[in-house]
Amino acid sequence: MSHHDPQFQSAIRQILRRAAIDHDFRCLVLQDSGAAFSKFGIEPPQDITIEFIENYGKSRKVIVLPDPVAHVEELTDDDLEEVAGGCVLASTVP
Image 1 (cartoon, rainbow, N blue to C red):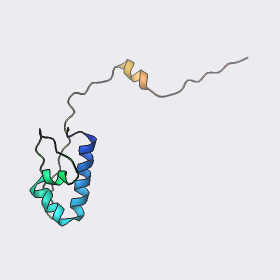
Image 2 (image 1 turned 135 degrees about the horizontal axis):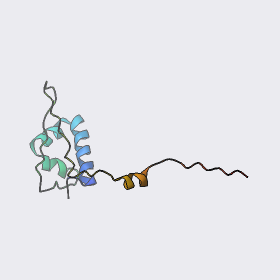
Image 3 (image 1 turned 180 degrees about the vertical axis):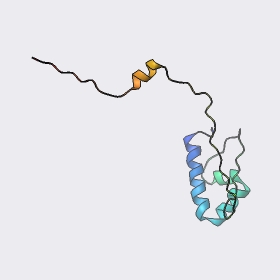
Image 4 (image 1 turned 45 degrees about the vertical axis):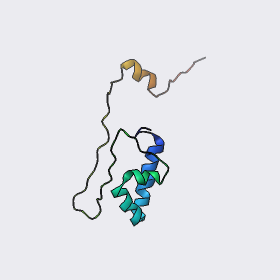
């Protein structure tokens, strides 16, 4: 399973929701993220390390940037023309 997998992303959202309201689960998440994922029947990807950080009540907040986009290509004029919206007005005069 990849960390981009929708099932994995859904498990993260569920973990975050439950950790916000369940103190014991929050402690588990902070101590053993793998066990937290197991509660939702998910095996975390083996190629990454997942660490949840307690950020509550601190004057310093940690904000994690999203992964960078590997390669961004500019669209050619032809590509833009294919996706451009608009309409064609036509009239006929008898």
